[in-house]
Length: 380
Ligand SMILES: [Zn+2]
Ligand SMILES: [Zn+2]
Image 1 (cartoon, protein in one colour):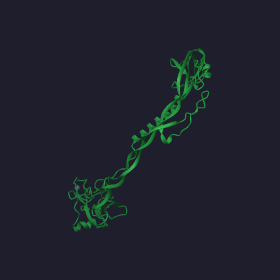
Image 2 (cartoon, protein in one colour; image 1 turned 180 degrees about the vertical axis):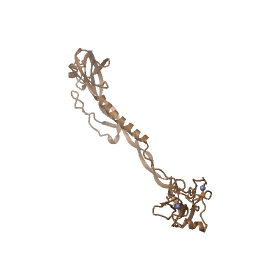
Image 3 (cartoon, protein in one colour; image 1 turned 90 degrees about the vertical axis):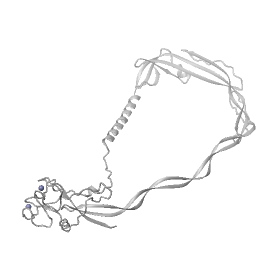
Image 4 (cartoon, helix red, strand yellow; image 1 turned 60 degrees about the vertical axis):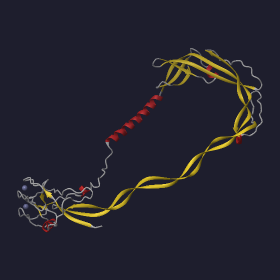
């Protein structure tokens, strides 16, 4: 890599007569003869704009031998007596003749790197915006709000109520072990002898007379069906020649040293990433399906009974020796209580014993959540 160095001459503005863009080689204003001083505006030099890509100064480099000698004289110093700027290699003030004393002020160097740091554009690291903090606070508040609500909603209190009525429904279903024809997959069928029930139990359904087997689709399976080439467009960074990058350094006397060098340039290149992938298809699976004889319980008769505010009873049904009985029962206890007005809760006992512990007009203690859900009822 080759380095190229140039000297860039800065310009300053006179605050005494407002002359602008005075070349740095002049330590005094060419218009009013006032010396450059270490005051805010006069102490800073303008080195002009740089090229956005390379950071190369848009100003011409200095070629004049005399001016290059000024640029090489070191940092300026400011006279402790009159404040005028002087060349770094002079021991006396050119303006007032005063000696260069140890308390003579030095030039303030400008950070020209900062200008170049903008290229390539810098991504500033921002602290998380206050908006996100607010969002977090809202999420936390909602979270604790939900917990507080859940605690409140599950809190219960006791209420007094009264049974306004009871009702029951009962049914007896007569079932018979009857022959039936079913279908099944041949490899799952094993011939088993049927055993008929005795007193409604001990039966075996059995499998017999397997017949009429036909081939049927039982399901599907995935099978490999060759390969196919699948390509995806991806991008990668590759070297694509060189580009010029320049940096400037303030010499503290109105001149800046610019160093440019060629660096490898990287470009984004898209390419096809191809791979062989297995292709699959669904293939039907066949098996033999057969008819067979077996037995199952079938309802043949049903008797029902219902009542209100009385003791439940089973309906009458005469059952043969090969049949069986199945019983169904359903109970309801209506309870009236006060909570923000008249309320009715229907308690459903699962057995006769529970149902018989309730009577019309009886007092009830209800456990109710703040949301109004009845959790428990008990006779009082
Ligand atoms: Zn002036
Ligand atoms: Zn002086």
